[in-house]
Image 1 (cartoon, rainbow, N blue to C red):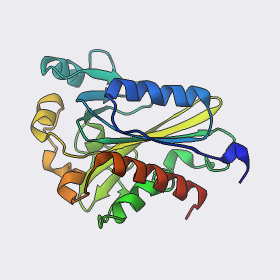
Image 2 (image 1 turned 60 degrees about the vertical axis):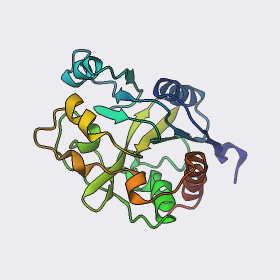
Image 3 (image 1 turned 180 degrees about the vertical axis):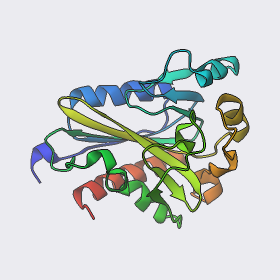
Length: 225
């Protein structure tokens, strides 16, 4: 492997949503090949760059006392909570692993997440979105989501600059469905469609899970299916 292709693999024990978003942006600006995985310690709504400042779900989040944190990629809102795992891949734009079809490459770029869940007996796969909510990204109608049967355990988003690609996402631990129903427009959605790794039987400690996912992501990128 060329030195330029070598991934800087980082597993982080815990961090807050705002610090995690800043870390992703810094990795993207640096533009070097990297994998970062973190465990979230607080609760906040992460929202995409195209979200209007007066979006209903942002106003409702603030009324519920939930911080709102912008991210560098697109999409709508994701309610993150303690124990959720976030991951980020950064690849230089000319890196062979980006590929021409990177916009639709959720399965390929997120294969390591599937592998890490499979190691714990969880049959997950990237699949079509449920298209149930215009505000909740994981229950929305764009891209692909990480599914376990008819339930959603995670999702991903992207941002491309002139020099690098950021492909990042979340794997839920124990979604707060009641709070999600207060924050998002879930009139057509069934909040029970969201499932977390706790209910799926993925064991702790969460820091070990973070490191395992980071290594699985790195392996899958270096050994594409």
